[in-house]
Image (tube, rainbow, N blue to C red; front, side, top):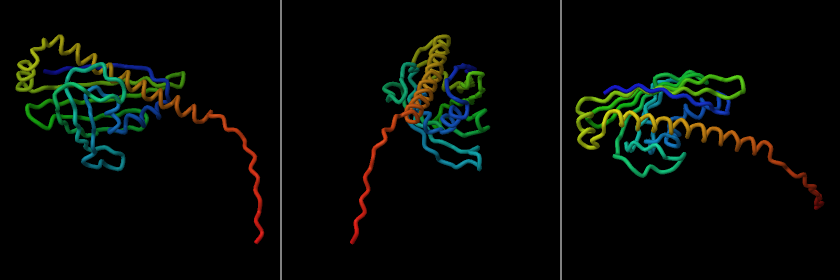
Amino acid sequence: MDIRWQGEIHIAASYDVVYEYLANFPRHAEWAQTIERMEQRKQGDEYGVGAQYHTWERQGMQSNRAPGEPITMGRPVETLAEVRELSPSYRIVWQARTVQKPLMSAELSFDLKADAGGGTRLLQRIYLHTSKPYDLLDKLRHRTDPVILRAQLRAQWEAGLRNIKEIVEGDVRARQRLVNFPVEAVDVEVRERHV
């Protein structure tokens, strides 16, 4: 089965802030509906391209996980992700495939574009491919109609975009509070000690 999806969301943060967050792959576990954790297994080149991450996921068609919450449902799946492109403040592309058979693979990307108001338009594209044995096993396990499956995947991916927005905008607001935090002047008396 092949599924192509794209979704777009506006984030009230500069594109360089959004890029910095998304290019930090282990932080994908904060927003993604399926990822429990990611660990880097191989360094990439000087720009990070070619870096590989071992990923522990739970595939359960979950679309209600809030940022940072634990994943409570789904079947454990391990994937290997490899960074294919990192164009600072503009584009991130990676591929992922299941470690175990039957195989499933995906190509995922983020494209970032500054908007006139100082925010970012974030476009995510996903191309998901599952092998015939994977499809058969999934059909036997879940008895899910392909139309329902596509709707569940769409809801899951849209929830991920909403989580990214919530996290990044929350980080920006927190930084602004720190910058604008009022500091009271305190007079300090210094006495010299003469020995």
